[in-house]
Image (tube, rainbow, N blue to C red; front, side):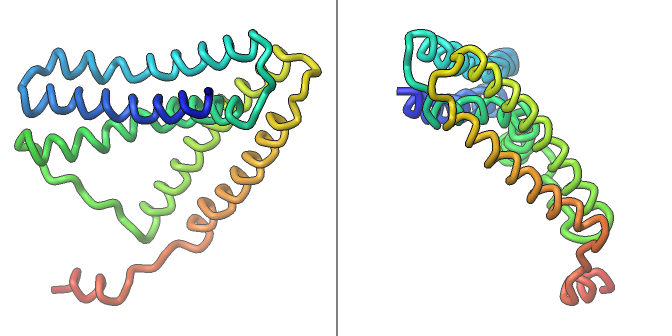
Length: 185
């Protein structure tokens, strides 16, 4: 059940974002659009409440309960930038906004963006890990190995992301030759 709820929450998140942006830019109802965008955190609240109730009722802790914690951590850490990304594109397409700038793919700016992405990943990991540990404490000794295993895997993923993200600081990407030729003319 929790697995389906996670999928429904992800779909719901994007439905609220699309509805909010549609109201804001196409229907010209900024107040309604802002309200719909502010409702996106309610989806996270729904998921954590449902996960807690499911565990409280005696459900065995599964990987899906752990993924619920990860989902919440990721949406808290990355939700606002994702909504801003979508907002810029909607504003450009439907609201006469400026064309969104393409991110720089080389040099110091690229390295800074990669580091900032890792810091967000770290925040998501902290939030998700706190929720995972709370679930483990809430359940007690009842089969929480899947939750602990998920925490270990995510820690390894975070370490790999660190190595990749910070490698651009030590070894920045170079501008491609065709981009150099275009920037000279």
